[in-house]
Amino acid sequence: MAIPLEGSPSARARNAFRHD
Image (cartoon, rainbow, N blue to C red; front, side, top):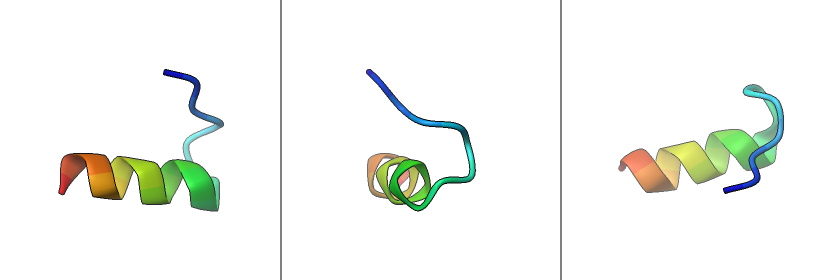
């Protein structure tokens, strides 16, 4: 899984939809 620095809009949305 290639996720940018924790704080980017993409990373946040991905983490949110993944942890939702």
